[in-house]
Image 1 (spheres, rainbow, N blue to C red):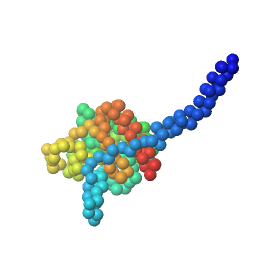
Image 2: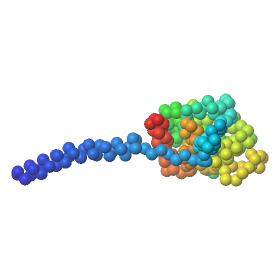
Image 3: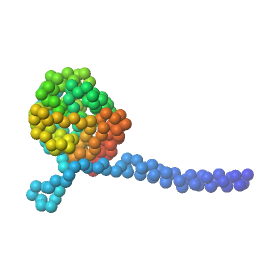
Image 4: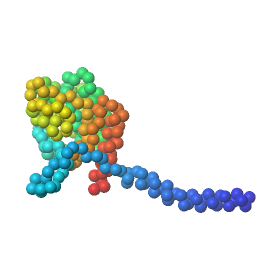
Length: 222
């Protein structure tokens, strides 16, 4: 009996000693130990500061939303984390799958105003405001969270190629130029690219959701 009592005392002592260590491990492996996401794209020279560079950032743009309102990125995306895609409304293959995954993102982050979604049409000649409005209605797009954008093809294609790096081959945004990508792109509040994800892959979009939370925590820690 005395031996059993001593064993119980040792176990209690070990428990007292181990609880703080276990608590520390939980905390250090949780949100306080998030690693920063990769920043994609080249480093670019800083004007007026020879030798200094900054990571590539998405240039400002002005297009038109499916609501018919002007969409100016300088104001609409200020202090926002956003996910971008390039699609077209009549696409019969990957675009409906991507749209459904974007809708999942809309629902996941519906109560978080700092996170928004942007879809650029790559077929602006056919994807007029009216066409995009109909598409938005079909898929339940919430304009306070998600904007479908149309406008000048050259502007959109220049963004796809040189802003988001979604096309390997060069082009002029002309009549016969065409870009089609399944990628969703995660952009931080500083307009830097933080990740590429397959917008047709459910599990990869789950990863995107997780990394949005990591990015949010990165800004919170600042």
